[in-house]
Image (cartoon, rainbow, N blue to C red; front, side, top):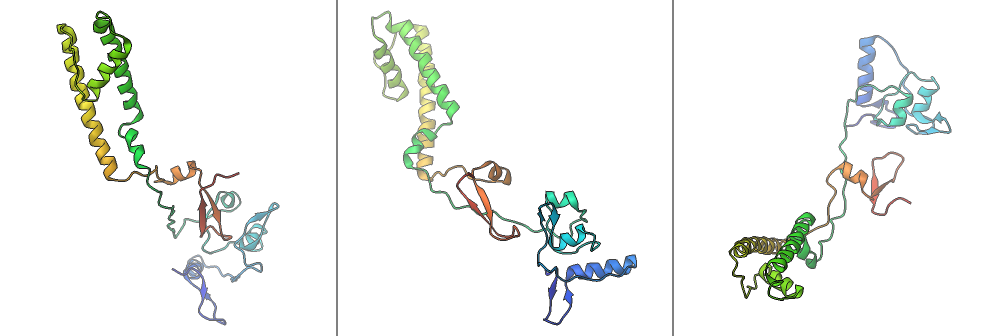
Length: 233
């Protein structure tokens, strides 16, 4: 959609912007002298408290207004009034496809951190319970107690099941919990080993702004920009 262009070297400037200006002139009944391009060939930026380019003419009141494909910025809106935008451009951010995580990372990625915390807490509570209720009475040490609880959690079976009814009920519930836990762990592990895992990606501009990425403009206008992975110094 050309806003302002020339059909030839000696042809006048035409485009959507000039058509809009001609229509406004006919409706509002005014005439105008069109400045096709500023001497410095710039849109305009603020340098040392003054503006150059097209915005410089408006800032110095040498021109009433400017019509062009101009983007809005915070600084420009502080010094100039803009009309309702008549065109919007879409911008896309492209980042390099991240490399997959090592396979060994899947060993602990099967559960989220708070699930691992609950597993360790239940393991510690169960170990203390069995040591206090059973193995302390049979002169067994803490190491034997930990080995017994770990064998049940790793589906390795257990020998010398206590005869107390209350302890056996608790042990049955513990066996069922271990079965559910190991089944969930092995299922998640197979799924993670089957499909590769990747680091957390950027899915929104908010995440991009909060990341360590920074952009560099390659031209005076932000039409072409590159994103660097190194944090700003």
